[in-house]
Length: 150
Image (cartoon, rainbow, N blue to C red):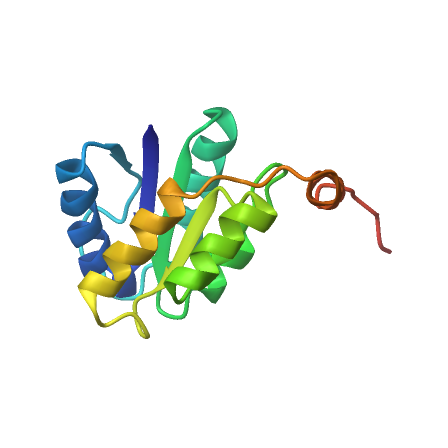
């Protein structure tokens, strides 16, 4: 399973830790930046790269980290087929996968100080299957509906 990871400067250290953790756990990890700590870089660039890679590689997952996780979540969700979820605990990771078939996990560097908790959230997200009930499939399909606003 391919896992695309990305972070801005606020999530850089957490991302580095996750790359090591995921690689040691047997996952194929593709780092999409930031590649060095650069204070003031933008969260948009790695979020765009991860979202595009997940969309283009069926069955893959993405993990994004920024200060609050809000910016990367919003950016990733602008791409058709991406269902990015900000998860702050194991239970939210389970529901994101079971109910919403989330394919990008977004984490907060500011609020996720415990690396062990972060690892549990990531492991749970990657190992939880989507419960493909008709109503959930219907709702997910509606996420990519577009409406133009003037």
